[in-house]
Image (cartoon, rainbow, N blue to C red):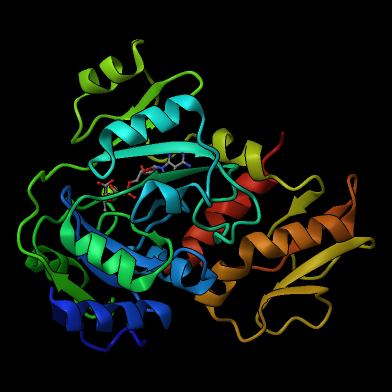
Length: 318
Ligand code: TXA
Ligand code: MG
């Protein structure tokens, strides 16, 4: 999909959902209604689709995204459910509750979805159109709110078009969202409310039988150390390298003859974002624990800003 192509408005009927699911399987982005707000959906197992979500929203950072699934049985494939998590899911799914749970490594999620963390945020939306789309697609959908970064969340298809027209393949029009406020986000062990939202905290506390502590607001960027601590390579990292120093593993962007690995040989920023977490791991393995990695300059535009933000965190002194 090119950025100049226009965004189609798709009707929320069986034929429309089949069309939307086909676009998603092709790696395109489709906005869809949930009972909270419209989500900007992409195949959560497809690195390029997830990279495009960040590109379309103009997000300057790789914040982790919520993974949407049709039911608890499907969700169990992607995360570990403790007894508390099972209790909350049984009580409030489908509905406006997102659970942050330990990730099942190897379940196939793009590392961009979790921003390289070992936890994953999972939500089972109640909206019949979201349910229909998830079942037609048959896999996990990564979906932040369908608005440009820093703007208000959309509760109608027209709001999505106002912000993202020409940047995404389609919007499924399911009318206005009933809740109009994002989902409540809860992490467990110990129970913590990361974001107040559509499900009242009191209801969650009654279900768990203990009070929730309130944590940092995840709608704001995570503190630099939080992400870096999970995903800094063991090797040292040098940015904006013109050429490798002796013993360094060089990660290139665009044509770079001395590069061992490349984020994108053609200089495609979306491809580079899609490859970022895989290549960092590979470079780390090649360099070894006290080794050295260098990266050639990445342009500070579009999704390049998020790539540079992530690289700066990984390169920060620790
Ligand atoms: O109601 C909603 O939750 C909507 C609809 C579309 O489902 N989605 C939504 O997504 O509000 P978004 O990306 O706008 O907000 C998701 C929040 C972010 O602040 C992110 O930091 C947090 O969830 N989040 C995602 N994964 C996380 C994780 N593994 N740990 C902690 N926070 C996480
Ligand atoms: Mg949002």
